[in-house]
Image 1 (cartoon, helix red, strand yellow):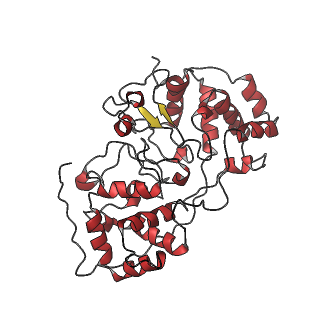
Image 2 (cartoon, helix red, strand yellow):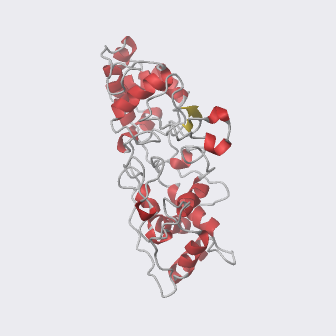
Image 3 (cartoon, one colour):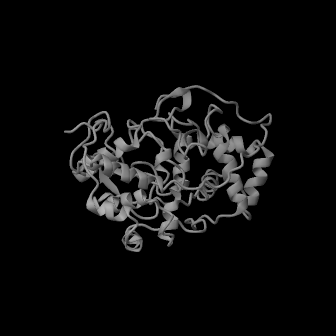
Length: 352
């Protein structure tokens, strides 16, 4: 197998040259619209979870509150840092007791458009996903009962839950905790130059980005990375044509197999969404590749059976840069103060 650290030299394809010259932008857009969709102009509706300003504000407070962890150290933002692309820019996250998690943390930006959450799709939506890290022993290591005890110990949180879930006798529940976080995360949408191009602006992409978009579709990348999020909507074997080395594809992580227990799902993972991808290194579920050019080359050989030339890689990476969008303004919340009944933090590590 060719080393993923070496990109084969070559020349730009004739098609890429034609696109780079600025010709046929409308034709390129028409083909792109068959595979992709621009971000909507409004926050999408959620299943059984009406979004209100009060609920979004509550969810934002919970997202940033480290007291939702047993240690009082880790918040949702610790692994999904909104200042660094919605992830923590680490191979795998560090959690409770400084334990290291098993997989790279996906970005939370635009995650509302994924058909399922986590690399293996084990959570159906963002609300279900929000419950997982809180209870994971290597992440926040908390329990639903302790989360609720913490929230109920602070009158301000009780008021916020009542305003967010009016008409409920007891609104401070673990389900509502998750729904509030989901509502906030649904607002984390980042419109990008690529959306402007899909919406009719011929000049939103550079000539090189247009060449990269053409290659992205022609080479077959869009077979897995399509839709609004350019990924997040299907499951595929990593190493469809040629398995990468154990440094990139650890043999002890069988991906979706752990969810379905189906042999065909061994080493199958959800296609990674590509929005803001140039902000979220390192790459893949193992977090072993720091260079986006190298990641693109690996995908060429492993998934497409194509040895991409250096100019082709450069053009595709340029296109991927057009997926980096504008972050919504997020003002750090002032959180309620603890009271005498607030559970104390603990650093005890309980074996899984």
